[in-house]
Image (cartoon, rainbow, N blue to C red; front, side):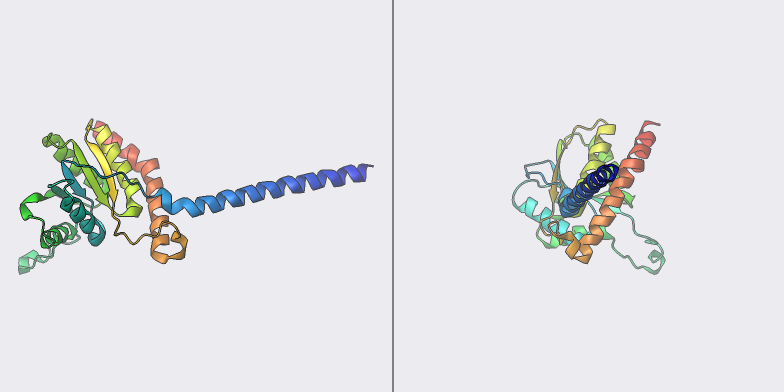
Length: 226
C-alpha cells in the first residue's frame, strides 16, 4: 500500500515538474521570439517643430529625416555634435576629419535640404544621455519648440525614447516626442536570432537598457537635482 502511494506521489511530482519545465520553455520561446519587437518604438508621424536625428548609423537616419522633411512634417533639423576621439590631433597639420554629425549634415544637404535648415548643436556627445541633455538645453532656450520628431535606428528607438522622455520630465520640459525609427534600418526584428548583426544589436541594446534602468537613470536624476 505504501509502495503504491509513493509511486503515485512520484508520478505527480514528475508531472508537476514536467509541466513547470514545459511552461518555462514556452515562456522562454515567447520572450526570445518577441525580443526584437520590444526594442522598437514607433509613433505615427505628425507635423512637428523640429526633426532630431540621433547619432549612430548615418545612412538609415539621414534617409528617414529626408523623407520626413520631403513629406512636410518639419522644416528644421537638429543634430547633436558627436564626440570623435583624438579629433584635434590632426588640426595642427591642417587636416579636418568630419565626425558623424558633420557627415550627416553633408549628406542631408546633398539630398536637397538647405544648409540653413540644419543645425548642429554644440556638444561632444558620446552617449544618448549626453545627446538628450544637449537637446533639452537647446529646447529650454528655444521655447518655440513644442514637438520633435525623434529619428533613430529601429533597435535604438525604445531606449532612446526612454532616455529623452526621462530627461525632459526631470527638467520639466513639456515638448512632445514623436518617435520615428528609420524604415531603412537593417534590423530584423522578426527573426533577429537568424542574423548576426541583428542578434548583436538585441543583446547590446538589452544590456544598455538594463544599465539605464538600474544605474544611469538614477545617476542622471541625481546630477540634475544637485
